[in-house]
Length: 150
Image (cartoon, rainbow, N blue to C red; front, top):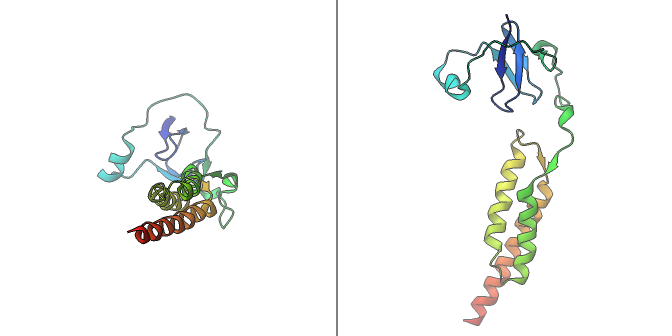
């Protein structure tokens, strides 16, 4: 009998024929059937149901590649939108009296956290760093200018 398992991370559904450890296309390992822990049951919220589709996208976890090139299909990373926004706000803060520097700093640090989390598959750490640096320089320069006016 076949059951449907829905990945908790990417919401992709798979046909599961037997108990064991599997590897999802998003790179996460899942166990079928799930442990009877209340925490995991709370996360999934989905019970397997009967289905009659194929399980072509699933591989046994014992056959998964190991090492640094584990996620080769995720080499094409997209730029983090917060990193781009941070850099744009930082550059604009130079011309708008440093008003946009605090949002640029917040977006820059948030982008760095998202880029560090591998489940997002984002790149652009250099953009976030430049946004943070330019926003810091802009904020400090406009602060010094404002203080000298007083």
